[in-house]
Amino acid sequence: MPSDQHLSDSQFDQDGFPITIGFAPAGDALDAKLAAADGLERNEANAEHDNDREPSEKSAAADQEPLTGYELVTDMMRRQDEVLGQLDNLNARIELAIKEISAARKCEIEALEAQRQMLENDDQAKHLKAA
Image (cartoon, rainbow, N blue to C red; front, side, top):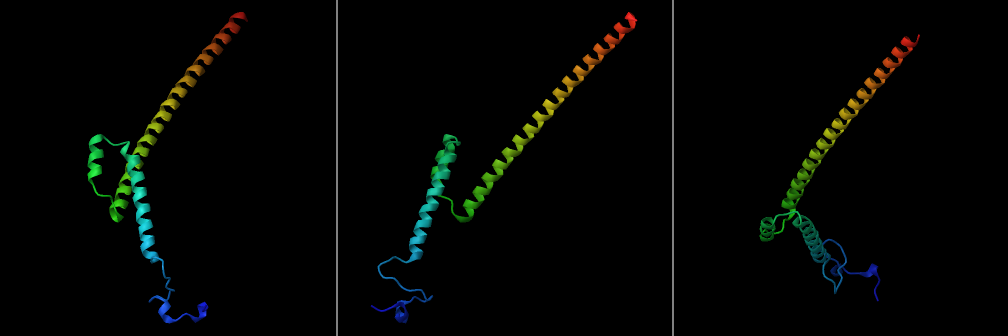
């Protein structure tokens, strides 16, 4: 059996890699695996968004061809922008709620302070009458 040092030029492809017999070229197998993985990811993403869609949107989405390359990136960026918009709205609502709570708490503190001041004035008036 010849060693690797004795391989002839005919056992190498044009890039200098050894040719294996009985195996599919790595590029074809890799392309098939990538395509299958891409299809699986797309199906999972579509299934997640199908729950959020109206029935008319579901039928329209089923008629469309799967997105590839630039279209997929564009669609993901559009969805990301939608989510960021929703987060901005949520943050604005949270900030408004915090302001309302702060204002209500400030009113409570001012009312308690006024009540305390009135009690102190009453106590001072009682002490002055007693004296």
